[in-house]
Length: 160
Ligand code: HEM
Image (tube, rainbow, N blue to C red):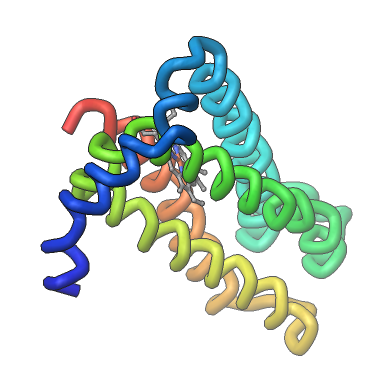
């Protein structure tokens, strides 16, 4: 890990001089367009995960079974995450130093991985325990907190 971080400045230097990075950085409409895609992806993730987690917490949509809630809401999460990854990568390519030197960016990535893993495990665990339970409710709360923290970290990157 140490040597990866040591070689980061050289990587950033190389990346920001590639024609692709220069194009993303200088063509005036590319970054706003990519940011728009990122924001739409965030809306999809938060919309689907809030509804799924609230259902797990028994806080709404009780007419849907837990499994039906997973089937209805989570495909939007799995659709939006690759969109966020792609648009996020393009933002990094356009301005590598901004994110790659920022500890908040790495914290955000770890939280994205953890939150996605929790949502995936919850979805799978529902097949064996369709009635849910306390453990499901606990992880629904952790998941909600993580996704909100991810949005906060994403916004905060601009100020650190
Ligand atoms: C999956 C991989 C992801 C990557 C590589 C990524 C990368 C980025 C980058 C590079 C930025 C620009 C930060 C800046 O320069 O200020 C950004 C912004 C942001 N990201 Fe992500 N992101 C990812 C996923 C997510 C997810 C899952 C969420 C939340 C559900 C999220 C929420 C945000 C927010 C709220 C912003 C600020 C948007 C703005 O102010 O226009 N990101 N992301």
